Image 1: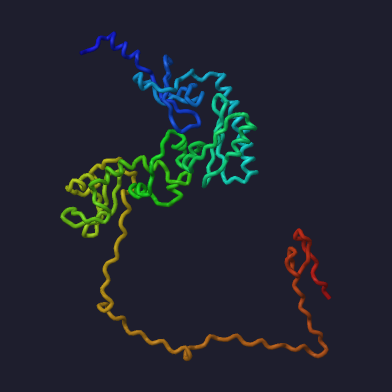
Image 2: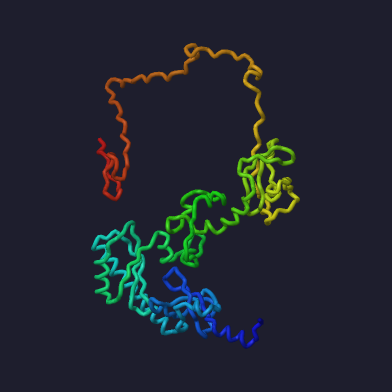
Length: 383
């Protein structure tokens, strides 16, 4: 039975208006009822949750939900100027608590690294995030922090992948880290995804700020798997123009495949045609699926010219007879310099003394001794 317009509006009134809230300093999202507030995307609000007052950003516009599915959290108000001043004061408390806790951890020689500290909006609780290779007994530290700070203290150990999510940063692409921007649940990433996409397997190129595989390797994985489905693997034999050919590589972006024909020529074919079995070479005047490459470039580098097959050594013509080299003893020896003949001075004549060459140095040689700043020293006395 069709409902009247009035009954339809009554049914809508019984529905709850629910928004999705991205809570500050928390990776999880929370659903809250917004009542009569007309909120827009990215608007900041204050919400009441089962853990207390929190601040966050609207990431989903209000949607109607059944009364039985009404969430417990609710939006209290939009963020006001007083709320912004409170957030600024909380940041100062976060910095003081972080410095004090890190000093106490160092004094206790605890094998853990403190990442950050965040106070709840009502300043009644602070959460200390840290990473460690093994389980840490921090009960004494919690009691000391609670006594000094006069608040409720919570210690939370996070993994290597969750650390950049809390600290935020910029990735190698120049944009905000995906994990701190919009990823709320980590999914499995493997090296096989990089192999399918043809990405270099160098660890520095595949690793993110956390030291694990980059999360963005999974973004296009579904498209690559759908593209490779039904295509022959690398090295498989196919028939192109009636010739047996071998598959060399696939290009996902341009939807083409490079094959080597039996006559040694390399040609590119449409991947969809290769998948369907109707293989035709892609000529230069045939448009590709993607935009053409810029002038002066090709889809694949040209194959170098192969050397012509040389005849076997036995079939090569013999070299003309060469005159044998004379033995080394019979060859003419190079001229040797004449030995120096000492000259004798005449009777009663004093032989001339050669003047010693004066050496200059910067304090390293013996010819002159200078100061430590590289000055010139005096040489030996001359007769």
